[in-house]
Length: 284
Length: 334
Image (cartoon, one colour):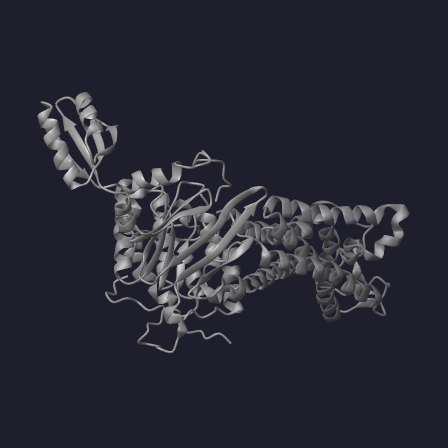
């Protein structure tokens, strides 16, 4: 410093949580893994459409699979189904599983915690940034699927799961609703990945762990003796959006998805917060 | 509601503040255990305003663990640490108002530029920290490399960026953990000059170090830690004077001089020391010794007072131990 007189410290004001959140987003924007996840969300729908153009068959056995060549509106819906198996759990854990562990890897928690930010502010900012990323990935995914699907196969009326046809406008509204419903289990996976990231302090362990939990739930869901578990598995909630595409709309699976997802997400976040607030910051 | 006044608001600026009399650092009975190992064992520290306080000890003595507890990064198993009277474990980040520094090597986000990193920490400081970035970069002479990613920085550059990061908080108390470690000689010299300059500006400095020259050069008070315990706390000059005067002696025949000195009244602790002898004696005894040597037919090449160096004291304090425990006994890396 150039000041000759003893400097009095400025009043250390606490930064707003919004500021901390914006910096979390900037950190994500500066990291390659963010683009890896978002890139996958863009590339997979493109590959799917290219495959449809090259092949003559289609994914006939899945909902809306029969209609993929009839209207571009069916493409995002079919892809949502495929995305639930591993793509979205992977895309989401890639960032949510890293967002705390990366600070441990870089030794930067001590850098941050010796400033004027409270631990809970940073935690909230990290949760919000992970969610923002997940929403962005899902929107990109659906947008690319709908736009390129529509350009290739046209924007035509959509046949619902009940067999009746809805116009393009209502089809888009329903697709938007489906995305919102789909977001619930996606964010739950993010919360589980965040917990693992906080507890293990290791990105690889958190990402693989969150992915494994998703896959194990899918396995539990297909074991015939365990049907009673199925409504309470996170993997099942990835299909809840289909209730919107029935006539009349079946709200039951969506309502159940809301509380089942919350039952996974809220305790995960709470446990992660407690660990984050109390943990010793060593290393670095 | 705790006031958010700057902790270092001077007496004249705010005479009613009890804080003005509160020491920048006050730690009492800090204990931290890792399993069976006690990394920090009942440490008391008091750093007064304006001190350049040395925190000296061998690697693994528990210095860094203590600093982490001071900053609220880890929870002590027992004891209290307060910065300007505020406990970080109770008051959170507010307790760090007016405090800056780093423990172990300063760490930044490798995928962002030096400047971007400073912008980030400035944003987390709130207030006008952002306006001080340019000045801080100039101070640590990183202005021309501020646009490069930290991932490509050398150790010394990161160390300087760490100082810059601390300076933009405009601290009244600066906590530096081994700031010269890993720097080349020129870098060490620059870092010491910088610390001296900051201290001259009135910033209270806690300097952790295992380098005795550094502490001797920069600090006026110090604590010496060993195996997690403070074995000396006080003024550096008092410590240096407490050990009595010694003289270094070289003669034409050191073997005989050793015998003469051993039998000379007032002269004690005669030792071989490098290419000569070292004796404990006051001025009069030294004069008597010179006469006795000449009487014995010995030529005196040199008889010079040797100030006890901190290094010598340090080894005496950290190695001399009734239990015979080695000073380098196994410790949890701090």
